[in-house]
Length: 122
View 1 (cartoon, rainbow, N blue to C red):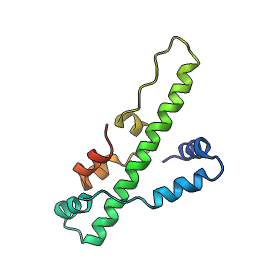
View 2 (cartoon, rainbow, N blue to C red; view 1 turned 120 degrees about the vertical axis):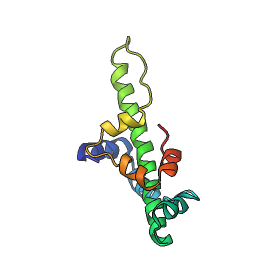
View 3 (cartoon, rainbow, N blue to C red; view 1 turned 45 degrees about the horizontal axis):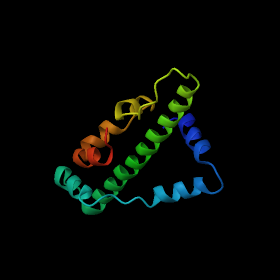
View 4 (cartoon, rainbow, N blue to C red; view 1 turned 60 degrees about the horizontal axis):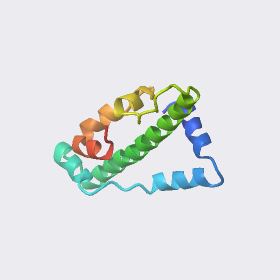
């Protein structure tokens, strides 16, 4: 992610210990059952390495959901400044990827396509 997006996330959720709690929640991310199995099936990785890759995909999914929420909130705030503007729609996957300098979605989709689609709905 770019530095400004990380700063925006920090400012949006920086209340008391919320930033620490968000970091803790991300650190405790567990991949859903079947994600590591998909990676083993597709790439023949050892189970411990597949579990690590699965956790990375699950962590990305949580960050992607957070980005969707933040981008929609910011867009909604901007739109409210114009009473004639239509309400903001949730940012789809393509729109979220355009906010990132190097979106990892296509790389992660090659690692575990079924799990990524299940974890990161468009």
